[in-house]
Length: 337
Ligand SMILES: Nc1ncnc2c1ncn2[C@@H]1O[C@H](COP(=O)(O)OP(=O)(O)OP(=O)(O)O)[C@@H](O)[C@H]1O
Ligand SMILES: O=C(CO)[C@H](O)[C@H](O)COP(=O)(O)O
Image 1 (cartoon, rainbow, N blue to C red):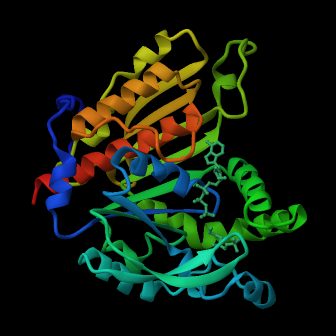
Image 2 (cartoon, helix red, strand yellow):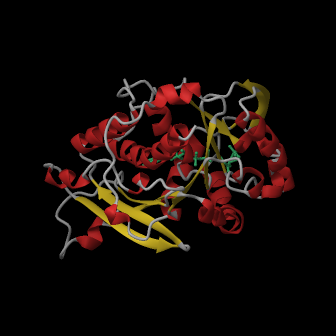
């Protein structure tokens, strides 16, 4: 760790042939992502899959390790947020096998109807994204090469979860409401503490641009605008991840406003971290430059569309914000082999 992150050079583009290095490795790199249900874990890590492609990256969901399916939970009253209602030791054993590069049977939970499907034999890719409610619990944490936590404000998470669970997971509105209310204290009790173990934290709040205006904000703030807060603690000597590979100030020169950027070196939980705040309109040119800079740094071809989902610019931007420190860490690991 450094006490003064300012004296570090900016990252150079094109220094790292990451795909070739990753293909040469025998053991996968494991990225763990934890956070509440509906916080955006899958959404915000899909940027890594988009950048690196399915040959190099795949996801494992820990939801398959729930001890009970939805109908059983309704009868028992247990919550999937309770670590005791999950087979975390078994998840740890499976993850250990994957980390040795061995094909492993992974249990599958199907959210569409809330039942378990047949376990699937999973062939490890060079990078494995493990996402779930308890990913940074002790049973799993020691196997992770990078730990990420997504912390989305309650009101934002509520809206996203309501919409998704009623449209895609077969919940009735009232039922989804009741479930969210029931889980509020469970989140604080069982999930939130994992944040202290993460080296990359993404916080998402409602847009705060209105508070920065003098008098009244004279621009639209659509519902899709959020205040993103990216907290990065360097892993080992990896100082590059603290800084974005581009000067985002150029985004303020775009026609479209409003936009806010702040970079705040901080001490947080006894660690030196950098905190990046962005809020508002994510200009397409800035997003493109950020994507290209990450690709150039890692020696990646620019992604040719392909994830099947056209993400709004605000979501894609957050995906790239998370991808940057993670790719830095992956590069440092792959370079050290
Ligand atoms: N910036 C955003 N704007 C609008 N919707 C978003 C945004 N980010 C995520 N969402 C939506 O929020 C919902 C929850 O996201 P996601 O499924 O990624 O969460 P999760 O943490 O993986 O949830 P779970 O653990 O329950 O599977 C999804 O429908 C996703 O499309
Ligand atoms: O906390 C969750 C993580 O996604 C889910 O609620 C849990 O996996 C159970 O899923 P479902 O609500 O679809 O039965």
